[in-house]
Length: 278
Image (cartoon, rainbow, N blue to C red; front, top):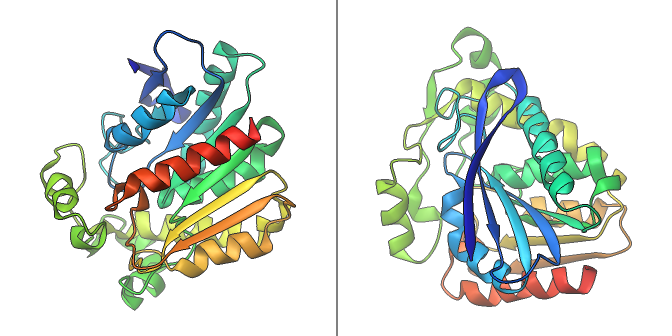
């Protein structure tokens, strides 16, 4: 797999870091915009990228603003609309470098929320979207305080820490939690009020617009996800306007299905779906 590390100027002038992963020795058959989740960075998707580039896909994977190696106050999200503008700019770059190739979006957790919004806004430029644990509905592990008070606190105390993310809820593989907790590019503080409110605001925007999605759709969700309710994946699947849509809720799996034990089977499922839509 070939790896390039680059930056571009995002919304409001912030520098956005991204990786371009590509197959070795051949041009990509299609391109993927890969969107990571809250408090992490795109580098955590290296294993998935190696699998998908091995199947011939080129991948553009940004560190979202305020995450990883991109600029912005760590994990403080002023507006998810700025993130969506950053993603639109990266889509321009990707499609400019690969004219004529189909483009897919893969998004996990908060990245799944962004991917849902992005599909609503730009589906005429996309061949399909894959959602993993899409963050449209809070899970059982998210406190009522975070859900109901954050909107008020976002205005009066935007940096107020509300709730910590328990890394044990990510995967049944204990090494995933250890790596997550020790990765300096991850954010290990509590979710700030402004960030929580912004995610809730954008989910409220996206949910009633899901029927507007008419491109091919693959929804993946862990059946034991405590961070995002599996009903989020079910809701998108049931309400999307696409005639080509698939839902997999994996019994017993936690939030990060791409990092679960047996993840290679899920990688293959995604790659086979992409192949069928190229």
